[in-house]
Amino acid sequence: MAGNLIQIKRTSVSGRAPTTSNLNTGELALNMADGILYSSDGSRVFELGANLTNSSVSGNLAIHSLIANNSTGVAGQVLTTNSTGTFWHTRLVSSDFPPLDPILGDIWYSTVFDKPYMYVYDGSSAYWYDFLPF
Image 1 (spheres, one colour):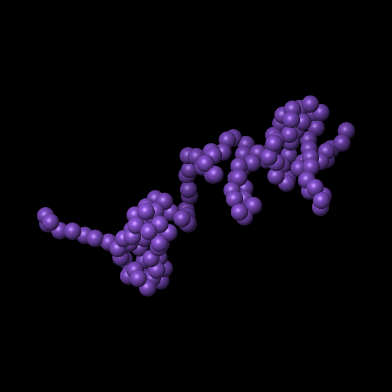
Image 2 (cartoon, one colour):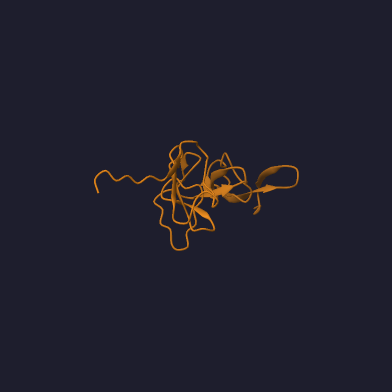
């Protein structure tokens, strides 16, 4: 076996991916620039291992932490998107001052005024609405 060499299709051009017309069933292709390994089942090309651009999980997924936009979320935050980016947001907060980067539907409990507010949009502007005035 010494001296045997197995090579797979490869490229060093970032963003280049194989198609079913240039990758046979069971064959492997490596994009060295992106660190992605591909294979094919004959009808589609799929990625293997790390650095995946898309992923599908049919069972359970356990994650220790999640990083979005180079930031790890903290307790009480949720991950949201506006279709152009992904953001960490606090959905419910209790503090003296309202959150600095609210999204519609966020609830802030004012410890100063001892009542909750919801971040709403009235058609022309967004603001903290006192939905339990007392």
